Image (cartoon, rainbow, N blue to C red; front, top):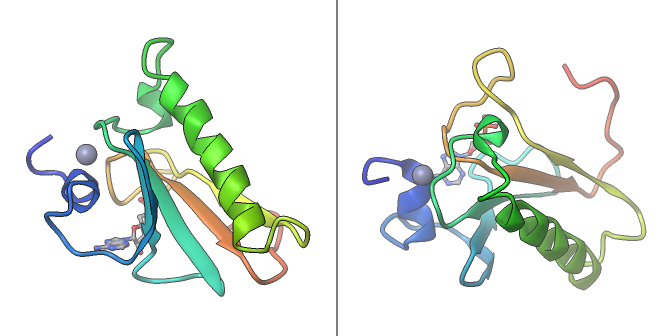
Length: 114
Ligand code: AMP
Ligand code: ZN
């Protein structure tokens, strides 16, 4: 999608602090971190949110979770635990309408989230 912030970040058209990339997804540090480690993983293809996941585009979601599991090992927070969050729509407080998974680590999380 031409006018989408995360499409542009994944394409390298807007700078970001890269954590990981492959053909299907791009991971980068959140600009406003909420934990000592806070990065976002997005599909390169534009999908609006979890609500727009279908049987056809769902494989990239599984791939992203496999990438998160691998990064959690490589970056050293798999053992201590972490949180993966995806906000959806207005009540879910989604501010960027391109599917993204927040990965938060490095502190004890609270429950329930606000
Ligand atoms: P959400 O509110 O769940 O839609 O998450 C959007 C996230 O994107 C927020 O945590 C923002 O801090 C983050 N964000 C917005 N713009 C940028 C950017 N240019 N680079 C990195 N992270 C960003
Ligand atoms: Zn997009």
